[in-house]
Image 1 (cartoon, rainbow, N blue to C red):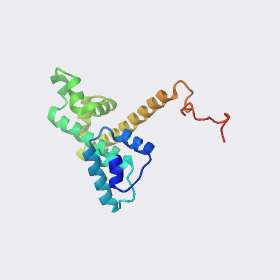
Image 2: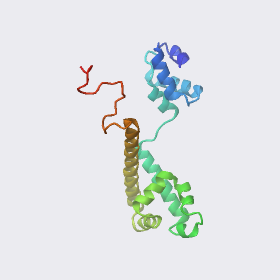
Image 3: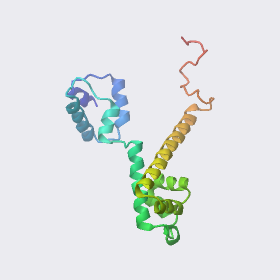
Image 4: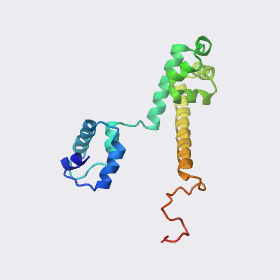
Length: 181
């Protein structure tokens, strides 16, 4: 990261460099350099070093909730065409095989709709565009719900036994404590 910051004529404090490194240490340096070059080309300037988040998103893009939902809806629809409603009866590895083909998110969506048979029935009785729209809406709802559950689990883990909502690190003064301005 030091070399990258120098290449862009941008001086960074050591603490900031450590944060960048911590955030991107799992990425190959050549890809980070390519992302930096892309960012410089996009902005037309070397004077502003891109955020770690920006660099990471250029190397390892994250799909939006809408795109994730659309993608998983297509996977589910493809598997309806491939296996049909008899998948459950025909597959000895039920539900492991569908979980593998649909992925965790796809399987969770199927469970929230009710069952594989229910999903297949919905697909059969609805116009394809209506089915896709309904499944995508369910997928978006499921993704957001799972994200919320993950955040709640992180908050609980961070709370370290303190009451909910009081997730400040121990060295940060709380309201009403000495040192509070």
